[in-house]
Image (cartoon, rainbow, N blue to C red; front, side):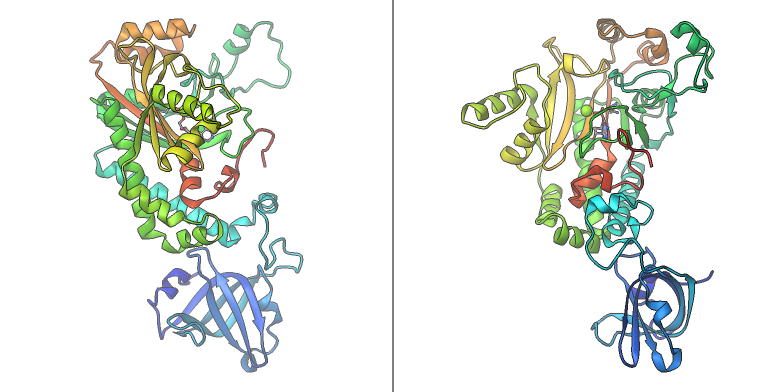
Length: 460
Ligand code: 4AD
Ligand code: MG
């Protein structure tokens, strides 16, 4: 069906010309001699006004119903009421799909909770139109950033036999029927599709390291899966994960890469999506634009974990009430992360050098024997959006860390062997893409930045 995108009509590329546009009616207004439709086709946040001369069209009621899809032919002219804009004087309107009066989207502001119950329709609201365009532009910018820096895009497998994070949150992949005759776990897995225990990947990192040990600089970008039963506004069972991995790199290089990446994609977003960001500023987060400018213009903070603990202890002494313990060795909880990024720094903070006991087996062990060269990037409002580290490149130290954790070595043969054949300092990180979308839009629930969010107990 040949037609012109509304975004191009509004950009005044067709003034004075006869065009065909298609879209869904976002509002309809009937006056004495004229009727007006605003149309949206998803290519822009803005609606296109279509003007119908009732003398020519007669009964226009079928065109004006919210949610109806139409095809309109007409001439692009300067808008009468909206100075500087354009509108269409229609000569022909065809209803492609009618929409009944009980359409679940009405001309009012619906709650986010209600919109979550109609995922099949919620993208027809301004909010989700803006969210999904931002999401798409950000994804494109991430690719552009890495491609321009000589990174190779690698597709790592989604079905794996290992647990990259060792946190036991792997979804199992099986073809066994509901009831199986097997007596032992070994027998059960040996007879399954792969002849061994298989699961959905929690991270592409382990395979990413394989690629980086040849291609030098790589990134993966795809879904990761975690069977975490955390029912929070920032946890998904299926999330989008961007993971660069760099050979010949140490922790400061990893941090530099992460900071440059965030600044690059936010600057690009401000250039490409000004209308969407203004919308989020107005409806979701006052100060959003200032926040984004500050991210691009200022250095991120770097804070040693040990200093973070001292800072939290001092805060507690001066009366700040934390629910969870914050002694050296404890993992930082959301309340701690928020205190650090929101109350102390009010900007993104890289926390570095965490205790080795609370981090993954693959992280480079620091000379102090207690900490690892890890970093989490914490941001106000969302908390952790990036987790990364320099990797343990020394074979014996890696094996020791795996033994301490009682890991099954045979599932990690390839990973271990990289330390035998030309090992080198290397590192990388994982960006929670959905959390980045939350951060730049001000959306406060991760369920509102994906088409079909998967969370515990929720599979629509
Ligand atoms: O900190 P994580 O667990 O680190 C890794 O998976 C490393 N293998 C990454 C690497 O070094 N290549 O996860 C990385 C990021 C987190 O900071 C968070 O933003 C996001 O992934 N993330 C989630 N996002 C939504 N829902 C979940 N359940 C998430 N789990 C992690
Ligand atoms: Mg993490």
